[in-house]
Image (cartoon, rainbow, N blue to C red; front, top):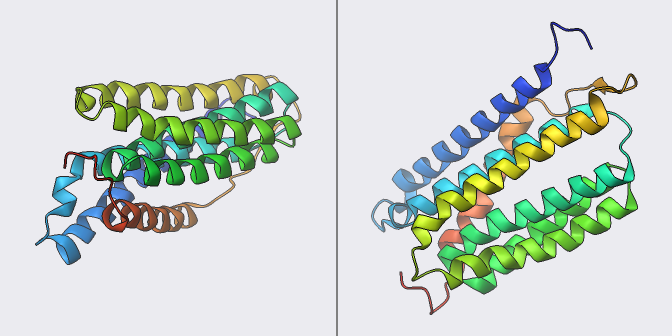
Length: 227
């Protein structure tokens, strides 16, 4: 890896994160003006869609960065990757859906996404322990995320959420840094291979945003929610 190309992958990962956030936001604005303007649903849940877009963007950027290096990953690093991806996916997505739809829908959504991403992250690291840890963390994060938002619903939840999201984002950034330090930095066998082009990434973002938006807007809501 030449000095002039150093951190080129990291710069692209940041760009992917920004493009994902912008794309998801544009899609939701389009849904509002084309289909739901009269109902006001998108306005009602605008803050939660913002948190959803932040979650999708940083999860996408972290996964893209992880895929962009071809390198041998030891068992401990693979376990940390599976655990972090599974936990943060479940915690972030589950918390948002839990706040809008209640614990059951939030836990189902968070758990399915958390377990799926966590298992895949560990499996891609080629470590059985990483895959198992990813699944366990996905279950934990997928149920804890909505539990937090539902339990705090009437107790300053909107004050807590920015802190909650900042910490989750920091953990994802920390995972990317750990992966680079542990498996790439001093590894002569590591090499760069751009895994997914921008067009494919945007397409996946569009599909993901539509599915998650539909879950928030159209699936049943708990009777215990105050709005």
